[in-house]
Length: 139
Length: 295
Length: 121
Figure: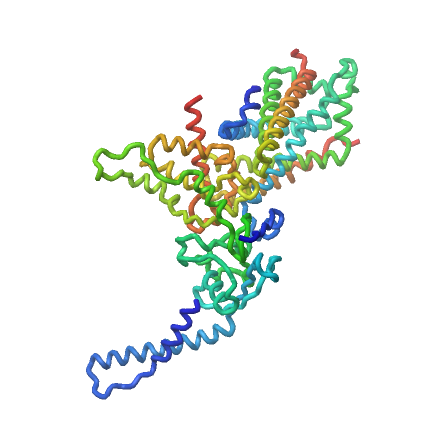
């Protein structure tokens, strides 16, 4: 038999017309997961550089830890990144709850509706939190 | 289908009627009936004539043939096919093959959604050719072979990998012990039958495996069809306990049930409406419970 | 809790742990966010404030559990995503051990950071 034709994965995704809710949910959950893991390692790394604090400067509020954090928080870009982190975390949590329901066998008939609900809820929570996140001291 | 059109033409020729000279009541009734049928036939033909002029559909079909010069690079061929009410994708493809290009190659057999031969990728989604109505699709209709499988020719894909995964779950019965009396049946309760009923409907068409992104990425993944087959036997009360444990052992390997990410695409595309994801989830729970007992 | 980093063979155990850690993380992550962005403003955080919180045994324990469960959930998630994409054979084993080590290092370093923030030890 002569050679068969392998169309490859990238081409496959291009031809897909009907992306279902379940497929989107899987892709978003994976993407937000990677972001959160990346953040986890970064977070511990940043904290690592800023502890080991001298008690005297801590009392004065001028220690390395406090100045590192307030320094970061004074940058507007960091505030926006925090909102992004909130969005990513909230979606991962809400879709995660949806997946837990699926794993327990609850509500399988409306699994696509629950995906849309978690998207909407994520948006709502993020928008409602923007004032708090962007507020507070800015240098 | 081409044969059906020819039949209609022979029917019209037999329509001429002559009135009998001496009429009995029976003859009169038969004459009336024949007249009525002739009128209905004529009416239908008039409608179909106008339908044929206005209602054609365009098929864009994936072509590939490693042995033919012009088709070694895949391309899409256009076919204009006259539409009639109740036409399926398979009807359209057969018309195209019979009237336009006899080299158009695709699998089909029963044309009633039980053999599983004609699973295709139509307008971006896996569908069974003989079961999908043209009227529910957007023109032009794009027909391609199933994704994530090697194309042999035109719309025919290599199904060997799918069959390998199905065989891997050992899809056959084995009761630990048969009843003492050789002629006695192995009984199954109605509730138990209801439980496995949907999982018995699988026609091995391959649409589910083709729609699963995990099956696409991970070559060793058993796939929804194979796991559903395992479910069909594991959940059947007539199967022996040892066999069930062996079966669970097969599907709880790393590339078994755990690879399922509940994408639900399999459930969406299954032409027999089997709730595949639900069955896979139940087997996951079953495996966890089974293992907890040994801790 | 170091055992679960090595028993990668039975997919069922990791699957269950992923779900169990998920349930715990839903609560703790939401709590962490609320405390550090809504109850306190992130820009108002000082070392003294952090130290006060981390010197309460229950809070310290919760944060440490947060660290361990998040590390498992995340590293296991990454491993699964890679296997789904087709990682097999010896490369898979190599990745498995590297991820395990990375996770272990993260927990160790995170523990050291936590200890630096508390007056309990």
